[in-house]
Structures are given as C-alpha cells and as structure tokens.
Image (cartoon, rainbow, N blue to C red):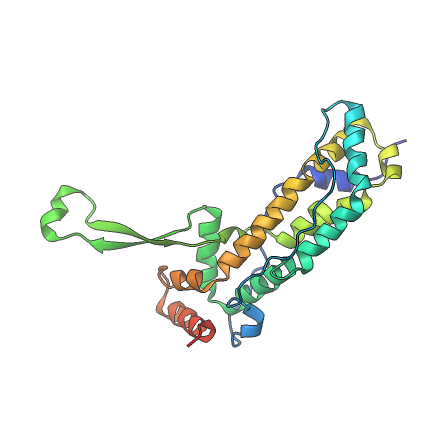
Length: 249
C-alpha cells in the first residue's frame, strides 16, 4: 500500500536550499521604534538543547534507511523542542523575522534593493574610488584607485526565509513522520525520507548560522557601513536619521 504523502515528499526534495526573500515592503513612512529594532542589546546565548546518544547514520541499504528514519522518529520530541527553542529564544528566529519585516518597511527601498543584490551576488565588500594624481594616470587605463572601506555582515538573511526553513523544511515533515507513515512507504519514498533525516542536523546548523547573521546584520557597525553605499541624498538622509535614533549619545 502506497502512502498519500506525495506533496510532502516532493517538497522534501527541494527544501535543502530554501531561499525565499521576504515580501517586498512598502515605502518607509513611520518613525523607527527602538523597542522593535532592539539592535543595541548584546545577545546572550541561551542554554542549547543537546541530543544525548549517537547521531551517526548507517549506510544506504533499505534496512539501514529504516534504522535512520526510526532514529529520528524516536527523537522527534527532542527535535520539536529544539525548533521551538530556535524560534522563541532571545535573538531567535521570531526576533529575526520581526526585525527583518520592520527593516523592509522602515528603511529606504533603494538601500534594501542594493543590499539584496549584494546578497544574491555574494559581494559584501563596500568600496570607493578616488581619482589618481595627474602624474600617475598614464600608468593605467583606470584613472581611479579603488579602496575597500569595509564588509557588510549577515546579508544572507535577506535571501533566505528562516521561517520557511524552520516550518516547511523541518517542523512540518517532522510532525508527519510516524511509524504508520513509514510502514506504507515505497522504496523510493523511504529513500527520500532517509535523505531528509540524514540532513536534519545540517538544516538546524543553517538556522543557527542565520541567527548569527541576523545579529551581525542588525548592528550599529553594519548600519554605519551602509552609509558608504552609493545611495541618493534622500536615502542617505533617511538612513542617517535612523542611525541617529538608535545610536546612544
């Protein structure tokens, strides 16, 4: 008997790279809330939740696939608790998503678009050009020196939807994974579930990295570096006003 979980299995095939930008924001119009941004507070790591016992996986034989899947089913309460911890903890996924949503409605859209392009191109460096002295311009066809002013951090949070990663890639399949479901799976379906089980720790590690990226992105240092980007005067003025609001006297 074949299981009726085609949609879940199809989604499991493509969720390891669950890149999905947030919904485009409206034009900034309201005043920045310090309480919402919370970027001046130092992050205090919470106590992590660790899985006791072995987390190694067997080879790819049908019997070993079943063993791998059953191991995850056995530890399902642990993983569900761990995901809730990643969501709710201080500077967790809910904090990150809330701040991202606020960032995309309050900051200049010109800035957001530029940062998203930098994220997609994996080019976080901020550079500027200065004109070479007249006596040096003949040494190179380029009349300018290029200087690196800094490197923006945490840009991946603009291209990876952390809520979708937690709910679609991890929590929803985990809740559906039961002994009864596995008993009805074909060999092909078992292989898909086995691959998902083997990758569950790497997905959680990805979430941890995104949370660290979020803390680095929402920092005064990062915001001040953004002032060096090639923006219009209106966007720079808005950004400067925001930075002045969130920087201590």
